[in-house]
Length: 114
Image (cartoon, rainbow, N blue to C red):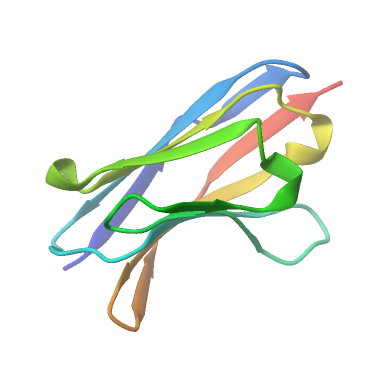
């Protein structure tokens, strides 16, 4: 059984930093790993993705502020979030892809106060 567990969310003031972590268990040879978010009243959007080989991509709104990284040996993906803004407030989800299937975590709340 595949399990995906996020951690690291919380409440932070604008300009602050948070680091999200996501661990996947019960799965091997993961393809892409990514972070997604859903803000109140909005659809879920991709924030950042990283391939097994380490290639990364970001939504324009977080470029230069967020950094995604992964540890293949630990089936773990991280999201370092700096210079946080109130508009970054959302539930952040980890998505772990193997072939055509994506496994999701339960989400972790990030709240940025102004």
